Amino acid sequence: MLAASMVIFCLISGCADGEAAGQVPVPALNPPATPAGQERLIRSPVVMVLGDSFTMGSGPVPRWESYAAQTARTLGWQLVTAGAAGTGFVNPSRVRRTFQESFERELAWRPAPDLLIISGGHNDHTANPGRVYGAAKRLLVTVRLRWPQTRVVVIGPIWMGREPRWLPAVRDAVAVAADEEATVFLDPLGRSWGRGAILPDGVHPTLLGHRRLANWLVTALHEHGAGPDG
Image (cartoon, rainbow, N blue to C red; front, side, top):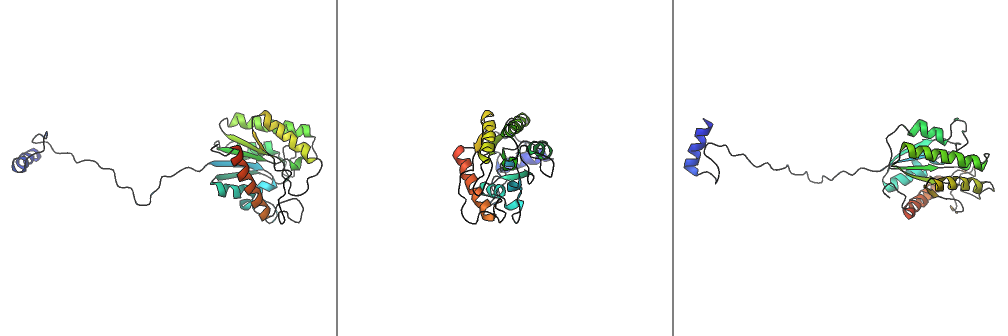
């Protein structure tokens, strides 16, 4: 019945060129219109920051207001933070885990991020710089073997006020380990963070201090081409 109907239709109105009588014309398939205002989704870089109380937040400054979180908001990262107050490359603190152990327990089992930032060292003031170097190098080797395609940046010890005599030796130990592993090293020592940047404990940054740290980090990453996208 359908073929006969088409013959009658063609006799009355005529068929298009190349359209045999009795064949049902196939309508053109047009893609649906894109809804107004719909934009292409772009994946934000996944960045992990491993550190101590500066990274995790301390005192009146919570984790989501730390310099790491403020940097992530500025640069549009998906942020994962790990570590604990008082810890370092060598110092396990009260939580009984070093940066190495925090990495293995909190981060290593996750899918590889675009960028890993390791920040710390000022809690290793009681350790021999040689031990700090060995621990930092071991951690960087572990990260490279676990996530060979992930960019890695190391931030040396942060000190908001006048730095103590022992600190440069720790900084240098971490810097040498980073250099040997072809890892970008950012050095925050020797900078003035301005008034209102330090909590009454004389060590940790205020919310303003974290903001200034974040501004410094954003600039330093850009200058070294060390962000998750290069």
